Amino acid sequence: MKSNTNSVHSGSHALGLVRSEHGFTLVEVLVSTLVLVVSIITIYIGIVYAESQVTNNYRDRVASLLASGELELQHYYFVKRGGFNLHNGVDVLIQELPRNRRLMGRMTVNTRMENDNNVAGVALKITVLEVKVQWRDPQTDELHFIKMREDYY
Image (cartoon, rainbow, N blue to C red; front, side, top):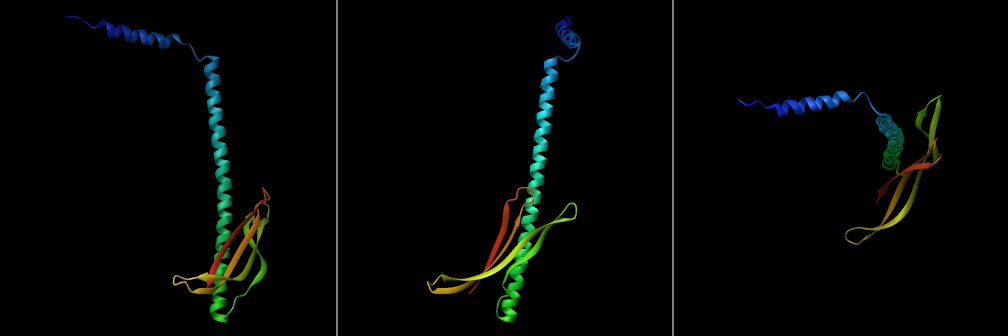
């Protein structure tokens, strides 16, 4: 009977290679540190970007809800009172900020007349009711706005 010494020898040879290494080289430590630092910086940048997007989306949503609510209120005025209650600007709260500060915006309601053609080609005069909510970003000083409209035939 013949024994397979080749597999035992190659196993002990591989084990000997592992045992002969006494630690990591300086290059291996530097490369692994660099990979770790780049990964942490990438994750941090992603978190900061995501946080700013969440804040912007929140403000857009608040402004959209304010404009939508104003359109509903103006529709009520139109149906119950026969006209709109237009105003040239009302201060609205967009967001409560840290240290008892507030991000305020401005909501305006306007109308204008437009001509439109229906499917049959008949010219119609429509009244366009437009609500605009605008605010300035406190970090970038960039002007943001949401504009919604409703048409009355």
